[in-house]
Amino acid sequence: MYVRLTFSQQHYKADMFTFTDQAGGSVCNHGECGDSANADGSNEFGLKPMNCPGHCIMFKSVTRSYRDLPLRYAEFSPLHRNEIAGSLSGLTRVRRFAQDDAHIFCGREHIETEIKQCLEMMRTIYNHVGFSYSLRLSTRPSSFVPYLPNPT
Image (tube, rainbow, N blue to C red; front, side, top):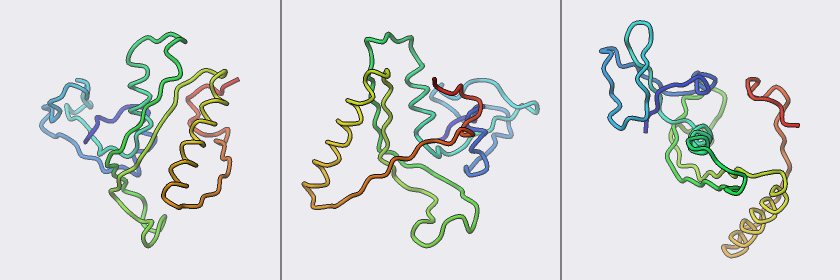
């Protein structure tokens, strides 16, 4: 799947496979790419590098009430990354991969329950197939995505 590059995707452009429609016509026939073009009339597109922006777009596509939360999206889809040579090596250097990815949109009052449910689901599945696992908490640095407001 390809997407028309938006402001948020420009942040990841260096690691994306991109192409330009030089004719100025639309190579998008599903109506999701928008109609605006570059100054020269061309449109810039990229192969989908991650699911996060798409899930955020889906969430904000309609006005929602707090009663709609928590809202969970999950996706198993092919992603494409054109990462800089040397940044990864061996089997970890791939350009196309399928990622099972999920995002939960919830209020503060749901966070503890949602985390517990996710960890319980993971424990159940891993135990069923005989896998062992360990967990580490990772938080985003304060410099991450500077155009988003810092949650309070």
